[in-house]
Length: 154
Image (cartoon, rainbow, N blue to C red; front, side, top):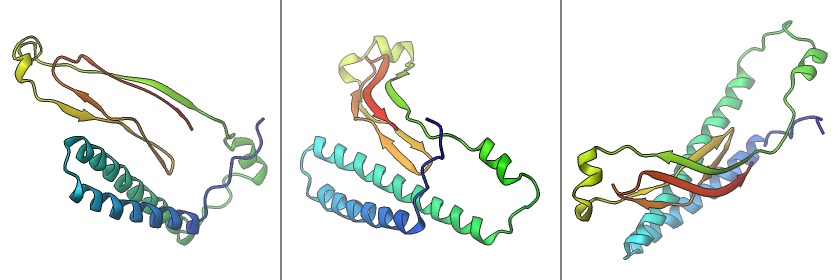
């Protein structure tokens, strides 16, 4: 246990991820245009949002690394030994059973249930340079909690 944290992906690795997500985004756009059913459109739109978010954060990470290389380093603050003592350890994190309580107006929740609009909801989680998504759930004003039962191991 303990040890050094896993190495961060190189800039070229992140660029490869950007290229992959861009190709996925182009394919999803084609699928979105060809989709005829509402369920297909919802899932394609969710995947498009997820790809776009990943691309955005990968580009931000590339920019952060470029800035780190060009900005002068502040020296003399911590020695190498002190840095090693303060370095984070790698580990795994499991996230499951995300619950989001909803609050509707009483008049909306208890009345007009037959005409209630429906909403497609999912979550995106950003952990450093990784973006994780949950399944999509459909809710209306009769639902009081959104529960995502996915298990994500990070």
